[in-house]
Image 1 (cartoon, one colour):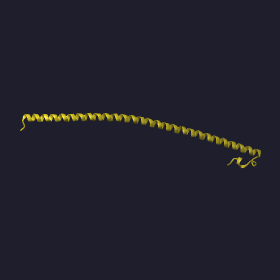
Image 2 (cartoon, one colour):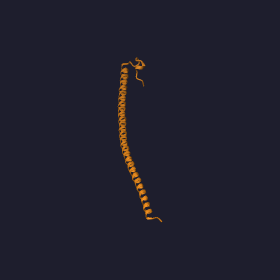
Image 3 (cartoon, helix red, strand yellow):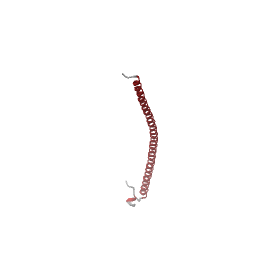
Image 4 (cartoon, one colour):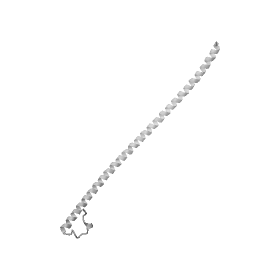
Length: 117
């Protein structure tokens, strides 16, 4: 049977071990808090970078869209101008042919000056 002194010593030893365990738990808690703060900081930075990336992508897509629209408008205008010039040229050729026929010069001119059908 244990005596009071032995119980006191054992309780003192257990108390010392409990203080060590409490210290380790406290240290671990501080480390967990530190890691949590680092994770939070990293997430904030990552959110900021993602936001900037989204803005860059949006601006890039808008620029691409504007460029495509501009190219489309330029192409349409160039096509319209080309069709107008072709129509004017055809009209000139028709007038030239009519004048040559009316003057009776149709067979005199070389073939390369004639309108091709």
